Image 1: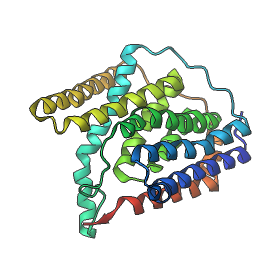
Image 2: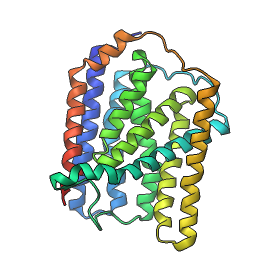
Image 3: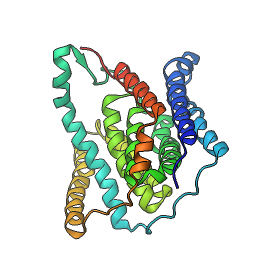
Length: 284
């Protein structure tokens, strides 16, 4: 079964609406109402996610694929460790990347004191509401619609869109990596597993942020939270490389070409890329 061009056009337009609406609400509309950051994030996420979710319900989505296997605890721990380890590597690479922007007089790091305080509503959105909505949109709607183009194309495009829509360079790189992990998990084990992994990964990030001011005990706990996943991800990756050869998916060259030749996809990617650059970089 091939994905029709009109359906793909509607998909890209709905994601473009998601991106534009979230940006407008978060950066310009809702902050002027004096709402707390937790309420702003909740309203942004719900209202923006409604665009692709309502479109999917009206347009008629294909039935979700049956998970290939039931997940084992070992596999879930490995996937979560893989997401956390990737984020750790990206955080270590950030200072190196900053050397590229410094000659231009630019930085993509957050301004000192510019981050919102981590209140309970903000933490609730980051750890629960946000992951649920994002998985429904990017793994539930986007990946299911791109399924006929092949698993690799569906995972890659959904991860790319997921990374760019964060409109922040370093968050976007992290989201792209995690999108690859969550996408693979959704394909193999089902959407519920990708939701759970996303919630767990975001919760670990919040806990690490809270531990920054906890002194020596906090530093040791942080070391465990990043060190153990790094070891588990490396060991699990090596084990899987030795155990089996890469799977070969059916030939879907026509489907892949159909996806990448969609002009509205490139409009979506260009919009989010420009938005990301403008929102990320500031003068030193």
